[in-house]
Length: 611
Image (cartoon, rainbow, N blue to C red; front, side, top):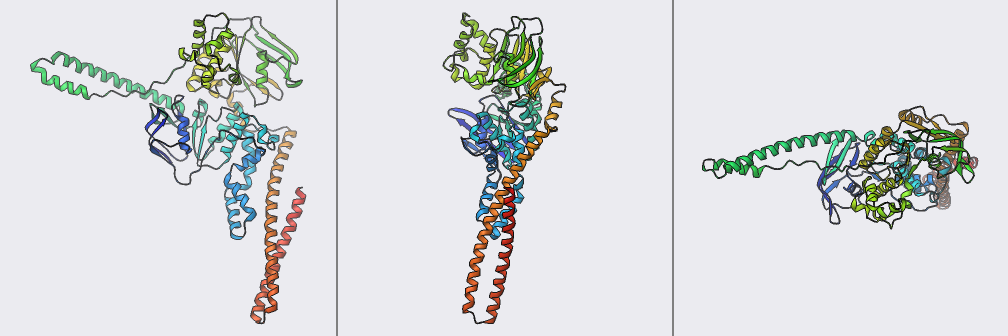
């Protein structure tokens, strides 16, 4: 169990938590929710031991292993698989100790290795890497070759691989695609320890969590159930408090009316004084803190004759290398499409083709006249002019438009007067995303193409996006790992796989099952996967054999030294009993040497066969 008892937390002059308490039982899956900046990540730092509370205590039972995702992995030449295996520090330490261990210590190490199932570690590591999108050929690549997003996946893999009683995850799906997110949900559902997760992904909070801790007015308020249950319970609680406040206000008015009427009337003065005291003691009903309500508003799109876009026998790729072939697709007015498929299959490539950011290598694309396409990609936030303000940036996109109209357009996406003139470099990730929404819709497009639009949006921002997209009259093409967004927006699913894109007949549940059931692989892939698995096992087996050979050689060297000493001692022996004793000792040494020599030869031959 974890006890958070009466803690006060201050960052600078800002108080985030004040005399806040919460209790988490063993095995619970807990979601931390609250407005951006309320202190969720700060509480994680306290749980990780990186930050002290001003007052109060946080208690973990002794021996609890608390694991979290490291934020940065250095450029290192270690392979992905070896990096992951090394993250289990106990296993790595035990394996290192094998080289110098003897006798009782050696037996204890083997017993502990068996207890923690060390022999299955490579297979478990491979399962996690596959689930998070790594291919077999990635296992032997050095970590330094991977981009920041893939290193974050590797950090997540390391957290999942390590044994733990408590697992802390802060926005674990932000760097994942839908396929990896679905795998992660399934993996965490089976996790036996205590899970505490910060997430703006409503699907994660609903699917995994059985307990919600809400940051409410500098307090921690606990709710049983998942996120939807929390919202309903909190709404019902607020409604009850509002009714109590209304009744109290009515009572307050009644008392004040009596006081005003009879305060200076001698016959009623005593009753009036009594009611004044009652009024003074009447405490206000504490209402729940109002949650921020963001609203986005996409401009009204012009109605164009269908189809809006048609691709016939399209081939798309880069530098003369095709990524997608046999593209035969059509987008009509008010289409709502989600692109499914693992990272690297070509979803973003298709999005760039549809937005005319990437020309077809072969085939043709027909577009409706006057068609305008709005395109959003998360990496665009890195290309924003950081020294400009949102108003100045929008003026470059909408030349000649008066500033009041520019401000009005930005305000449609929750960037008010203050944020409109704040330097873009000083905006948060979520605010930059909102600015990108404003930029992509400045010409009222008929198609919106959104590639991971929610990564920096909080739950309130995601709900605002859902409302805005449902009110939008144009077509939407969506790439996202947010299941909640897909379920509420999308009518059609397209699957990008095997070098092409085609409509997917099932629903999201069918697709989830398709991913988790691990469908039959083509023969070549099965052989490749099996070969990689064999390589991993061989490498681990060779490592163990070499360690055992070194131990045998040390034992044989020690026994040969002992035999020489015993043989030399015969020269000075005259007592028959002592001679017999030494002969028995010599026979035992010879027998042990024989056993060790036989084992050494067997292991050497096996090592030679393994190559």
